[in-house]
Amino acid sequence: MSKEDIYLIKERVNKFYLILPFNADFYEEYAGKEFAALYEMATGIKMLVERDNREYFLDAKPLKNMVSIGDTEFFKRSGITIDREKLTRDGFKVVIKDNVIYLNGGGGYGKINAVYEFFRIFFGYKYYASDEIRIEKDVIFKKIHDIDVEGIPDFKNRGNGFYYGRRDECAVRMRTLTDYSRMIDGCEVWGLFGHTQQKVLIPVEKYFFRHPDWFYGQYQEQLCLTNDEMIEELTANLIGKIKETPNSKYYMIGHVDSKTFCNCRECAKQTEEVGRSGIMMRFINKVARKVKAWQNENCPERDITLGVFAYEVTEDPPVKKIGGEYKLLAADLKAEDNVMIILALINADYSKPLNDEKYNGKDFERVKGWQAVTDRFGVWSYFGNFSRGVSYFDGVDAIAPNMKFFKSINAEWVFVDTLLEKNGIIFQPLYCYLHANLLWDTTLDVWDLIKEFITAYYDDDKGYMYEYYKYIYDTFKKNKAEHIEKGNGYFMPQLVGFFEMVDYKNEFKDGFWKYGQVEEMKRIIDKALYANEHSGKSDERKKTVRDRIRLEAMFTDYLILELFDKEVGAENFCKLLDDFMLRIDEFGLKNTRLVKCRPINITYTIWKNRALGIKDFLSERK
Image (tube, rainbow, N blue to C red; front, side, top):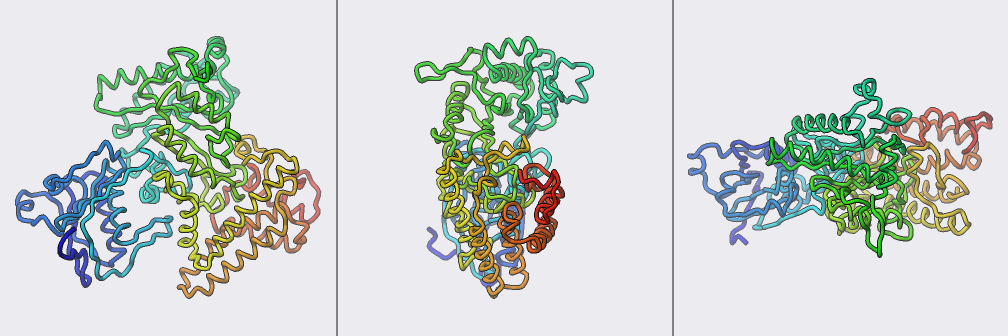
């Protein structure tokens, strides 16, 4: 520790200045801008920015009272060492010694994350959402002290599929980067992402007329993975994409959302021998070997990985269990070193951990089987009711256990998929925050995070919004247990409806919800609104919090509109419906799935007809 007090700012006067490398890269520039922005947010004062761009500058400036970001000449002369391999791309290092603040990282994003860590330690910085940033304000004095802190994420690459988690600034500040989070061209994690086989690499509109044998399915939605001519063309196109994205590491060769698979003579023969996933492994290994050969000759310094889905028709690994151990069906099914298997277990129950053998035993065994194929995994996880976006999803208890499970299989990339729409899921900002934090640190306590977020985001000093969330959580659990006890079968949260446009054993059948429960939810919401109006906060802040509460209250109104038209009466029902539709517009929910995959205007017609007693084919409750 320094013997004398170190002031970053004293009596509104800066005591430090910011130093960037003369040839700062994008990440160092971004980190510098973030430091300056957060410093001004906290103090109201701009910090002087300089560069280590002259020898006389380096000699003249004393090595103190500086904020050194990235690989400045001052950092190089500091004697501080960084194990970049250990820190990984996003890990950070914050060191204060000899009156100098050093912010650096394992890679580009690590340098940015070092800035956030510094402000967390000394200014109480917390990023809850794009519209809720907490940091100490109106700072006149700020003492700092010597520290040496590192932070390493549990997963090297993390993707947060929630609407706000996919926006560039939000993704960076939440420390989650996806295909959507391309801050500038050339800084992507993924060069290709998603269902790229038939959509990008071998597009139907370009190839089908000349090569119909390359495709399979009613809509030519799948490729024939045993067709060598197609593989050659796909590989050539892939190499073209790799050339176009020199800073990318991962390239996803994913098949589309479909349960179809080629059934040509050769594919049918190999399906009998090694299964559909076996055909996929032979395909991706051929592509991987060709890409590796090209890479060795043209850019041996690059780190290139091809990702392929274990998804839908390829969920089951190409293995057999012998004496309690999984063995490959054929030797050539072992994944090449530059191949990563992306587990996308769409049919699992995400209200339970994936390694829960009672409820997810089949999928747990699938993962163990894939471990005989490779030791390189990515995970495409799911969260949300994809057919009823405004509805509650019973998945919060599985988030942390699943993250720990993904860590146990050494997943190097984890992406959480959910409804893409803005505000398209109840408590979306909360779940975005939970996933971002647990993707970084799987040991965090979920309920501590929930309590912290709700208190900050809803100014919930009285605890009413936490009470609202906890009431929904507890009531759902209670109803679920009663539902099972009545012999209605195990309740599985509904993902399949997104694809098949049907509900599956969901909570909107068999009297799952009770009207009295909805009334209690509305009573709690009324308390939260009253507390906000009498909080003493500014009118602007009260309006912000009021709107956030009104958005989450749409769940209770949704339950009434879907289930309890008779209980509220036609007149009140129609008033509620009109107000609900106004909030749909106000909060940007026009593309949200309210019931199955029906357009909102059809759902509106069904609800209104039912309340008014108008009988037609739409108004039957399915």
